[in-house]
Amino acid sequence: MICDLSTVLNNDGACLTISGTVDAGNAADGLGVTFSNGVCVTGEIVCRSDVLELSAHVEGTFHTNCARCLKELELPLSFDFTETLTQNSEEIDDKDSVIVFSGTTVDLSEIVSSNILLNLSYKYLCSEDCRGLCPKCGADLNDGPCGCEDDEIDPRWEKLKNFK
Image 1 (tube, helix red, strand yellow):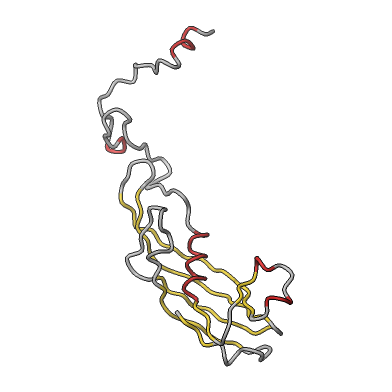
Image 2 (cartoon, rainbow, N blue to C red):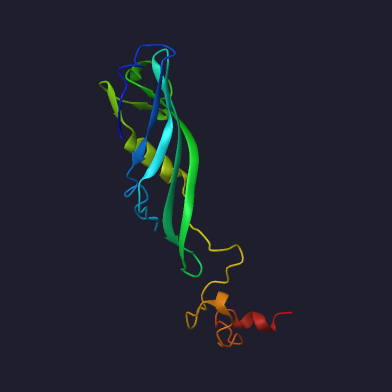
């Protein structure tokens, strides 16, 4: 999603409305999350002296698996974020909080992807009381008991059985 910033650059108070779709396919690589469609991005870029302030809202849907029972989940993603952009990095004190760009265009895809990554959890559950899978037979315990016996004690903890 390339934005032409020529109308707001060096024009204090000028505002550029943005709206579009970003392909979030690679945004969450390694997290077990997939996006079947792009995410919708709406917002605005406002010129404030020698920096641009990006305020945006991201909305979409992603697919993942429950961390306990492995059930497939389709979940909504919706969040707001702000970023500061500049062409001149020498006047900025905290360079880690500012995105530096050159020219009159900026690719919002990388900025949105980074913010998606920050707004995803490392695990998702199908419900708060998900019972998960049986560690012995792999049955989904949400569907009912599996019939495996719970009396077996892990040999590493057996000595504690006689502890009083």
